[in-house]
Length: 351
Length: 274
Image 1 (spheres, helix red, strand yellow):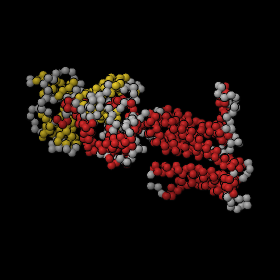
Image 2: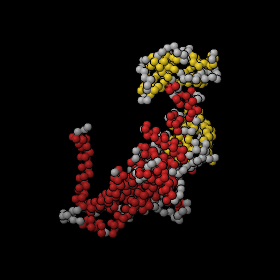
Image 3: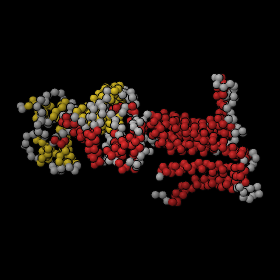
Image 4: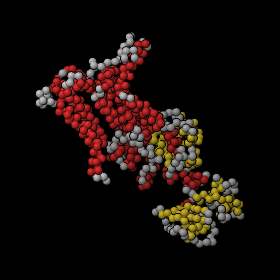
């Protein structure tokens, strides 16, 4: 368990700058997700923490010690790769023993005990003598996890470890990761492009975009109040509607492009270019019944059945809105519907 | 799906060429090796070769020089291949060209080059003498060292390129993973890259060994008549003393030796795949 401090990290590959001064302080025992679209620099940042890439400027401190110039083997970290990177010429047991052997931790007998304990943690005791290629993807993933935790590292780094698993296995592993983190309390940095995964697993979500940190916060906060247009679109795949904020009789109101207005959260100031954030799952659909306040008429353009939910693309004049509705609200393409916006005032952000 | 007749038609020219240029001479060589002076079947040529200490000395020299050459080729070729596999594609191309370039010139020309470099007053002996490492101007020609130097230069490209093919296929992330698990660069090379490159090292070594036990030009030009190897002994029997049957018997022995060297490798790679 240890703290991790990144200070003003800049990274360039040739003339391309991929990280523009990243600063981040991670407390001991926290589970932190680096979330962002591909190419945002999150994997590069993880590799810099691991020591697999050098920095152009800036510094990395683990537990207060400056490790910026140290090679990966001197950093006391463990990393789990997207491809698991199990050593193909070693059995499961030898793979898990490898970090102990390389770090000369304990006697042979002590190493055996720790390997056995790690195997039992991931429930793979019965496969200890198999070779990696004889295992399924999920089993390989558990071996990689056991290998990462066996040496009791200061920082655990996870590079999209769940992205190669099928949906059901991924959900199981998410639960196991949460439980494992609660039990071991390892400071963990987790890279993902999946916003649901980041929100469900982490204590802190670090949202990244084009080599910069967009927003840092706990999952609830970052989901409920995104600071930027990118954050709101990426986190909830929300609809961003350009609006003008005006002072209405009963408080601030947002004026839609078609002239209609809706009430927004109290305290919203009219300034600059503003967008209304409408999260897909916050829009409620009813059969068309004009005349109710706060409701808008729209036409269903596309309907995508997802099982428990249905995704609609709605058209309101020039506006297109994405909407995620429960499967019970079933409308067919071309049908007219009434859209009810969230109560308590929608959020407005300036971009 | 192709027809069987089409398969045969496609493979036909190659098979015909192999039969005429390889199988026929091989059968003829086997026949000659067991024909005696009176035309009857005999084992006298084999007995003569295997009971004469002179020829046994020739065999021993051939084997240990080939082993030495093979070991040096593998020991130099592995780090070279590793570096080639890990540099940028452009740099790799240049290194490959650099390694293949000597193969473009004939072995005879290259060997004469070594004679100039290694002989009395040549670059290496002369420099060593002038720098005061040795007391007099000497020659490296007609020594086993000269044979080893010349042969390593000829065979290194084969070894390095066979190892390169295998190292290129090793996932770089395995090395990165080993580094994050506490292995230093050298420990990673030893415990991850070396074991995974072993099939290439074995294939390359085998190539170097079989080529060097049967090589003729370089050992006879750099080693001279006082240091004969099996290939030059065959050449002498066939062209100087005109004992064709004896030359054939020596060739059969060489062939069996090479096949014996191949067997463990085929077993080993068979196990790897199975």
